[in-house]
Length: 290
Image (cartoon, rainbow, N blue to C red; front, side, top):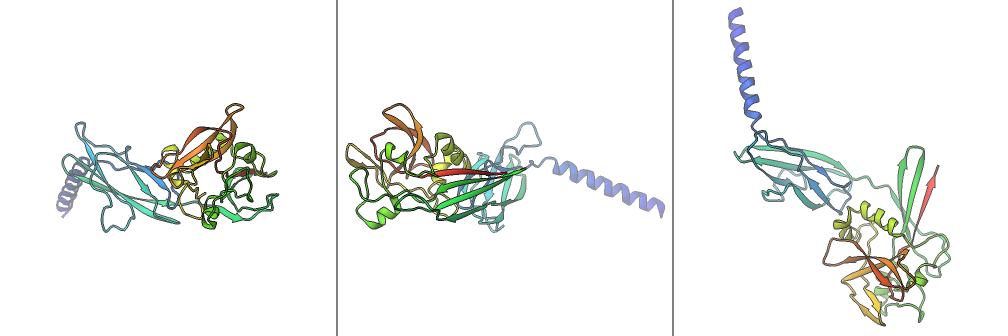
């Protein structure tokens, strides 16, 4: 009886060793989001940390973006990075399959959480036409940081000094286009974002290659930047194809930096505009609570 138990034990050990050797020929699947995912924002999922278990091998990848286990939203590809619009308002799972040259597949599902801590309110301002503010709250050891951005393009009363659209719907969507000298002196408690402030927002929105898209996403938790165009030499140009937003940073006496977003690109970038150009305005403020 004892010999029989020993024989069964040795057989089980041999089977386990065989399975382990078999499993070791399958690739290892690993992936992460390159930036914290936010609902409806584009994010890059990166599986380049996955690796084969044999020296001479190659890998392919495919993704179950909505995590429903019913199908794969992408075809097999040799590119380990995929750009997606994050589909979960609160949390969910995304799946990855990694396949090696022998056709062996490793599957991994990973959970993600959208962490959005914000509120929208209408502050008291010294502008005749007010605006709403979206406040993002970030907790750090010992203090609370409140990042306050106007969540509407700033609109001003009619004047020969800036440009207002004729249609009411356009005024509501686009606000006013104004020269830098007006934009820089609008409100005592809120100011033009500097290039550094805009860069922080770009980083929050997935980096320069994706922020142009994410800044336009029609979601309550986003800035929802619009594409009003720009007025130069007295003419409105690029309406519905580009948006130009002043920064508080001057280049010289004649020009200043602006953020540019486009309808046909996911990119956000900085450009230099003549201060006499009429461009869009978002205001912001930062509060630190100890």
